[in-house]
Image 1 (spheres, rainbow, N blue to C red):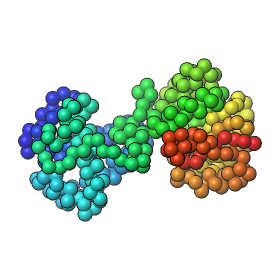
Image 2: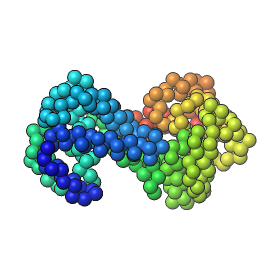
Image 3: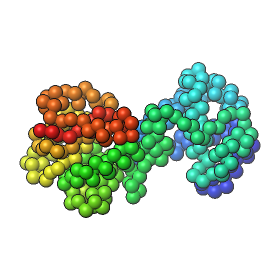
Image 4: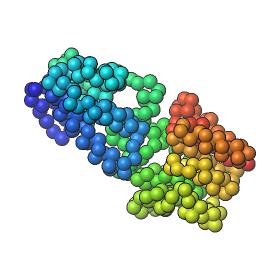
Length: 316
């Protein structure tokens, strides 16, 4: 293997991309991803699931991979376990990460001329709608606000700021705090709008952040009535923006808030593609009091949001 020169903390030059170099890149990428996931509170983004699959594929077959050979041979071996296109995309992801943040223009536009390899190093893949959406929380690093992690897609960030300006909610209730970044972002957004709004964010492990107009609560969604007590909620001013993103007792959580919500309040169920059965049951049992706001669900295309058909306005 020829020398790999690390020119700075943000730029590396690969003299030759071969199997041995790829193994080095794989090991460093794997360690960096594990550290990143830990910083996120072990809450994965959409694309983290793809990275995990790629790392698992390599780790399970690490002893059978011919690291002493060229990239083409390695790809051919791995094709026994996964489609070639997916393997090439994952390898490109690792190489792209390894180069760092600041890279030369030539490497971006002429990678095969700059790196002496027959492997097609495509740093600028153009995936379809699903691929682009999967990366919309970040291809490696997660979106942040003031150094706090945001587990929202770029599409939903844009949609939320428009909806929140239109609704001007006086109370925002977030079920599923994550690391607290989204609550901090919403508080700042409402302040910038000149709207007095109180954000209450709830999770099984409450973030330790202290922030103006934000209250973090700790508790179990299976006992939602013990944490979000009705007597307290009844005093919360409307309109409300209720965001469900906890993935636990979804039907029970929605039912708990239903009787307290008023006409014009908004309910958003995030990551709802896997929650459709509970959503349908909730809508049926509440006499379809909620209608989908198609303007926001389809703003960037049909359901280009993490809230599949689940941005609701209470109508009655």
